[in-house]
Image (cartoon, rainbow, N blue to C red):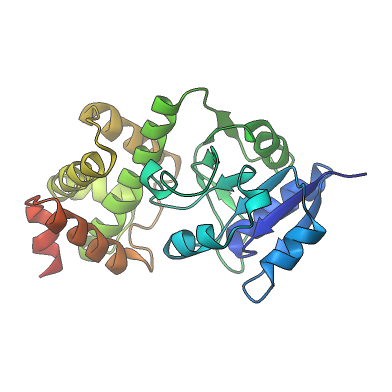
Length: 252
């Protein structure tokens, strides 16, 4: 019998993973918003992996609904993901992937850089995405994976928030708006350090972010979630008593 993978959320990203799992020889059981997840878990009690592919705004509520028998099988892929999102929940050592490929309606996926993955299901994720020629980097310790998560957050938040002003792409941002980019980067870094309780090397993070810029110089800065990301960042900054001068200026 084929081993089964459950995918909770068959949106753009979930559909890419579904293709990979199917090509790698797994059967895929989808769980859509209107489905009875408890009933499905009774019919699929022992999947090899459960991919939680809902958006970041739905993550907390979705974790609460996961059946007990799946709690040690979860893989998370959300943007703005940090350990605080799964620590102190019922999840048991989830596998984490920082996704570095895009999938938008009406177009196929586009790879920027290899996607780091950490956890028990890393090899399965690697196997599945390899069938689609999507590169994956397996990470072997929590500290390095945390850096990768923060790197992704720095990229998303810095580009999205700057894009509210520049409206352009990452090449334009780094070449023509370096002062803005660095000011926003520093505000975002303070927030990430507050959320993780860690101090990160600024130069290393900036270099790793700019490496992603080089992978797709035409990448648009401002996604549709940019205004919400700015509001969320400012809310966190207020709770942490961070100044976040540049974020506040952009928000006015």
